[in-house]
Length: 556
Image (spheres, rainbow, N blue to C red):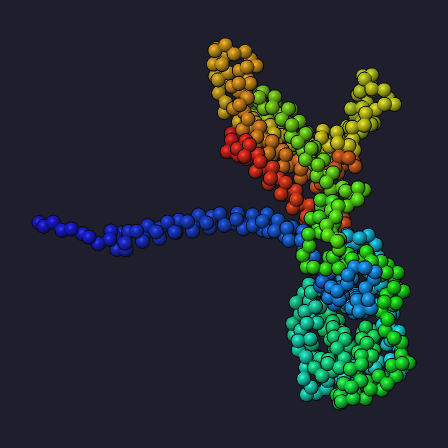
């Protein structure tokens, strides 16, 4: 028999190194654990994280202005904010608005800007109905000179530059991209038309307007471009291009389709109506003269904005910077303060009412404690709407409580108490609804406190109050903390109960958020208010953790 020394790695039963085998086993164990919790993680991601991320994005997203009025926004960059913009801005607005009207997006833009300045929405709707008539004035004048300009096939040949002509693929893709932005969709496939590069150099506005028409015709109307007459907006664009000094020289050497017709039309420009979009749009709606409306369009033209958050704290963006809103428009600051104050009052009310109940339950025999537990949980078996409606019936001036007070002679019939549609009604109803959420954490903690501690304190000479305050109460604080966090967070997010019993003075900020999400459809402002409320809760939670310590909060 001989002794041998093994200096190599320790091997597992299958011959692989033991360390590698252990790492493989641990990795497999972690993968199994991850697979078990994966459904929960996916559920939390889809129902909690994703909605919060979407809310935060909506609170700063503002792409509708630049997407709907791209040329107008570009022209407004040089406007100094005094007086009304010049003719170039009105021209850009007309062509932008025409496409938006065809896509039925101008009303959405008007609604968005109406959040910032009342009256803009009706201005966009009114002008949206007139853009066709504005273009028809120039269409009739051009067709009177040459009827060929009223034929779709003629326009198709002229704008494509004829067979073999070089196409402007970039312009086509730009117009399709703009249409995709308006429709929030993706379009693919050939449209059977490519704008001619040469005709684009001569007639840039006309080619741009016709290309937008062609893309819209194919992707949204599902028609053939060559068989359809162009939009009315193409005709004023044509007159604008022909009125340029360089157009005459360019047309003289142009030999593509429609060359002669264009030269003949250019020769009669003096007999055709001048393109004056300023006058045309103002005639449609005189509000286009209001400098304030143009300031709003320019201020909210960037794709992202802080305007929603500023509105949520009673401030606003102007061309001169950030300013505080007038006194009669400051409502959100009042609502935030009211929400915090009333939520704290409701929390303390739940503590005051719930603590004795939890103490009694914790010190009763199990049979009696279970009976009381059923009574505490009984409200959960009744609809929230029913409970709130019941309080509305009980608290109103002709309700049960006032009738009893009048019957007892405590209140005169003509001086019935006003306990509904105010803060008092909201506090009473919400205290009743949220009270179980306070009792249950406190009861679960109190159950773990040995009753022998109080007997020991009394045996050492403490009276009932001292024994309770110095021995029992400190041990019940974790339950109070857990219940307070639960009740407070639930309270600031309630909106059904304050809506029914709160009236004008008892509603919360959550009611305003619900209004913007479901009624006014101002999702950006609703998202900003929700984000601020979320931030306030997180700050208060952090402060609570620093002062009390979240580790001291227990549920039993």
